[in-house]
Every structure is written in structure tokens, then in C-alpha cells.
Image 1: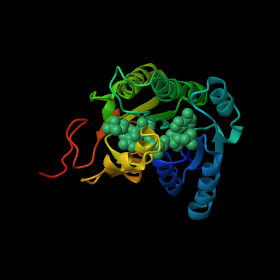
Image 2: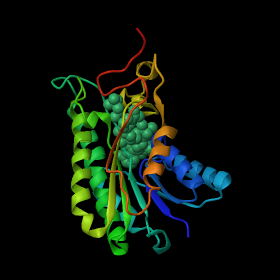
Image 3: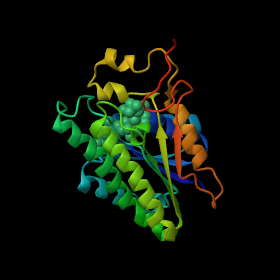
Image 4: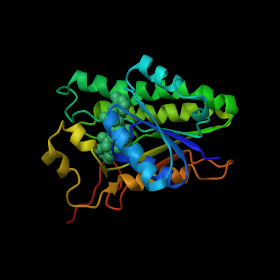
Length: 253
Ligand code: NDP
Ligand code: 8X3
């Protein structure tokens, strides 16, 4: 029987690449995000390229009611979720603490922290019933070291790290694995979203070195979920060869 993966934020970047990689590995995919048209295009692609079926759940992870309704609407035959990937997230703005927009901060907290909590709490009963499951949270190097103008984004990713540690402890008794993957810079729509559509500013983030790709992160997630049942990668930090951590990226002499 095919395994089932639920991926939040599958409309672009890491999430879309994860859907492609997990489908190729034979998983059935539950793909989520707000942009339903993109989910439909992705589902069609997964069917054509890998002959796998997908379930589309279009909802906003910031909305508590919507999140629970969406997860509770999952048909019986899709509820045996083997892997939940809490990937949906964003940075909004990159400004000094005193100048940054409170509404940007609220969006990041509501999406990256509260959104992750809602979806996890909604999915957990399905995993607990089976005493089995794997939760993969997408943190960041920004959740390991705080950088200038990173303020609230870094705080949300520190929270993802803390929640991952806490879930790992509290879910031990249900035999649920918890992995936190913390990537450095990877070229996706992330910077375009962060800089509110300013393509030039976004492109500068990846200039002068080879950043990671979404496919790199998807393959790492798939590897983490491919380990024998008695093994769990708890915490993983991954960067491109050019990047040491949040502060040091080598762009040539
Ligand atoms: P993208 O912008 O390419 O993808 C973000 C995804 O999150 C989209 O599918 C988007 O879907 C979804 N999303 C955002 N807000 C919501 C929401 N309110 N409700 C539902 N879905 C939402 O960025 P990445 O793929 O790069 O980012 C994925 C994760 O990886 C994020 O958590 C990010 O913080 C993290 N990360 C990214 C790094 C990078 O350098 N790219 C490095 C480290 C971590 P839609 O807009 O359709 O709702
Ligand atoms: C995204 C990586 O360096 O832009 O989490 O904060 S960074």
C-alpha cells in the first residue's frame, strides 16, 4: 500500500519539489496551499509524470477554523498520514527592529508558528490512532542564529526549533518521529515574497554563489523519511558549500 505524505505550502519552492520527489518515490500526496490553481496544476503533473493520485486541500494555515476544517475533511482512505511536512511559511520584509512593520511580524508569527501548530494539532489524532507517524518541520538557519534585520522571522524559526524539540519529547509515547530541517539560503520564491515582489532585490540574495535548490531540500526530507522505523534524524542544518551559517556566505575574494 502506498504511503501518504501531507505537505503544507506545496504551491511553490520546497513544498512543490517535495510533492514531486515523494510522488516519484511512490507516495500518495496531500498537497496544500492557498493558490488552488497551482495545486490543480501540480496534481495533474503528479498524475502524468508518476501516475500517483493527490488530494488537494486549499486553505490558509493562519486561519484556525479553516485549518481544522480542511484536515477534518480528509476522506477516511487518506487519513493514514505517514509523513506531515510543515513547510508553509514566509519572511515578510527585512528591516531594523524599530522600523519593521508590525503587520509583517503578525503575518510571520501567524503563518510560521500558529499555522504550524494548527495543522499539526489537526493531523495528530490520525497519527496517534495508528501510534505511528513522522512530522518534519521546516525551520531555518535563521532559527539557529539571529542576523541583522532578521528579528521576527528569526524568532518564528527559533520557535519552530523549540516546538520541534517539544513535540519530539511529548510524542515519544505515541511513537511519532519529529525532524526539524534547517536550511540556509535556497533559491525559491522566498525572497520575492520577502521583498514583496521586488525581483531585483530578491535576485541579489542569490548572486555570486551557488545557492541550494528546492529539489535539494526535497531530497533531504525524503531521505529523512526513508530511514528504518527505529531511526529518526532529530535536527538537521543544511547549507550550500558557499554558506557557513546565517552570517558567512563566500561570494569570492
Ligand atoms: P516559497 O515562497 O517558494 O513557498 C512558500 C510556500 O508556503 C508556498 O507554497 C505558499 O503557498 C505557502 N504559504 C505561505 N503562506 C501560507 C499560508 N498563509 N497558508 C498556506 N500556505 C502558505 O518559499 P520556500 O519554498 O523557500 O519556503 C518554504 C519554507 O522553507 C518556509 O517555511 C521558509 O521559511 C523555509 N525556508 C526557506 C529558505 C529559503 O532560503 N528558501 C531557507 C530556510 C527555510 P500559497 O502562497 O499558495 O499559500
Ligand atoms: C531563510 C534563510 O537566510 O534568508 O530561512 O533567513 S535566510
